[in-house]
Image (cartoon, rainbow, N blue to C red; front, side):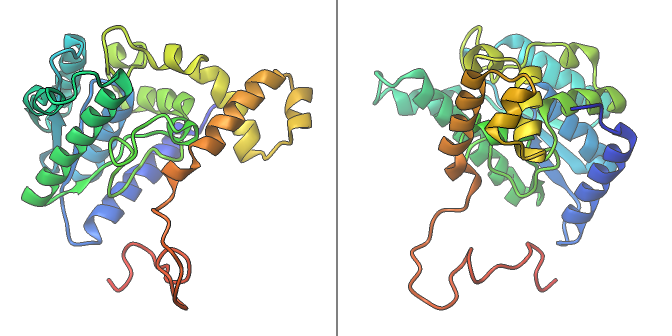
Length: 271
């Protein structure tokens, strides 16, 4: 996978946000700012598309969150001049898990992600504003996210660009170097990093995903191009096993026109 045309990509994504937000009669956007590169890039794109005064960011730390995450989120918000507020999620999360003290880290991480998204949708109603998604194509294909948590949104400007391309576009947009160069982490527990949890680097998997998904290479072709069979099998399984996260809930078909199959219109249908 070669370098992307970042100037063209920037124009496309800025235009996408501007058009998709304004054509439904709204002028503002809200997003969760985690201190990571994905949400920072979306904030930069949104500020350029809508103006900083129309972008609202929520920083939502938990008591075990790395203080650096909040510092980097504030850095991005201050650099852009967007509205920003810190909403601590510790009271809600701890109140819930006081009833389930044996819950593992996956349950706790999923609960945190969904709690953050409920906050964003509450602010979406209050402002009003559309919720911007911050999951990139690599994460979506691997299922590396929480259904109805960080994977939820009204629209997602970076869902069709790989993590490698997120880094490239972030350079073009002027995202602070501290954010670009940090180890990617969902910050779900102390010392957690994405690549450690996944078992491979983003740059490695992006090359495979691009060949597998965009170029539609067969397994034989992938092996011929130098990808290890075990790596191919692992990534293929992740894509297949997480496919339910990329689909609307399955509706039992009992009529001639079923929502999501026969009754399918664009989001702005009738506008």
